[in-house]
Image 1 (cartoon, rainbow, N blue to C red):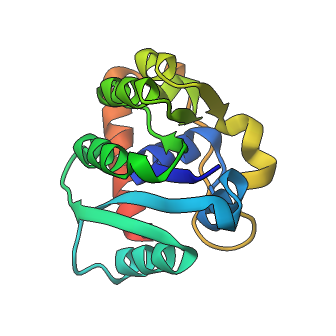
Image 2 (cartoon, rainbow, N blue to C red):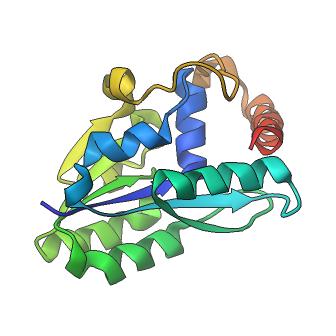
Length: 189
């Protein structure tokens, strides 16, 4: 069965912070598809500083891993829903199953349309970061917690962060923490 991956990099970063472990993007391709069954793997990455060598190295590494990287300059909350929806719909004739890593309810209508075309949609994520309607429009929900053994990045690389619970922050602290973590992400990429 031809499979395509659509990974929102910002969502996966937030999920990794919440889980307390890093995702090995090279492993992700193999976990969700055999090489001969992979149509394409799309990775949507915000660029916060086009002159940042670390960010460019990260994006280059994704390309060498086999991803088609879709990036754009983003300040604040990066929004890739329109890009993801467009790629899902345009490439749909070339795959039977899509694995979508996103939590945005803005994609629910797109997933519904794809399912109406007979496409199988697997949603990858963390429940507390995933819109309920988006989950409702998928055929199968893949909880990252259950895939840790297959997807965890081991040895070297990016720092790990302890899991963040929503109860541990007030709204004001949560926003400040998100800005600090986003700045750390920028430094590390």
